Length: 262
Image (tube, rainbow, N blue to C red):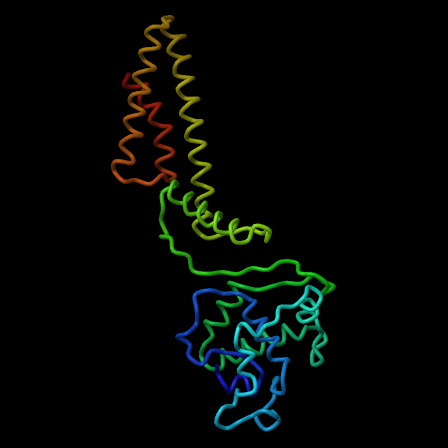
């Protein structure tokens, strides 16, 4: 831990910035915030800290940095810890003051990116009365590529959803990622393309039937159109193309072009 940050401001900051993990969970800060309020060194200078030692400034609080030392708080204690009004600024809670102090310290030692990422990727909000948690979020780096086919994207979603349901079935909430933003669009495009192809084939058959007045000729024309469309759809995965906006449009347009050459 950064001993200066702890002894002068009661902040837990990793001394080695290369040790920063790829996960962002506000509960880690909650644990250290709780630890900063224990013992004799919360937000005090080394002279006013009873347990201060020149050889080991954190000797009396080492156990507080061990994750197993956090006792786990009841809902009432947890809300009280985060909702207590600050004595220095009545418009803020002690928790908010702690986070602001940590942000300012990280920026002062040229580690602004840490504070910015923490503010963006994790946090917790209480309701206006500071009596209940309104919402909270955590983030972590996931192992999936930026670009995926619709099947691959759905598989990634199902795998992470299964992981959540297995390990946190009663947690509630939902998972999200940039990958899922386009996934929703991809799924809707597949539905629209499938419906468009089906309706186009139906309209083609009706038009052929009305123009030829021969159901046999109309059926042969419909079979020909279906074969052309199926050939196009089969070539798409063979070429390694993923299903995007252009592909969905071409899938529907293929039916119309097939009519012209039938």
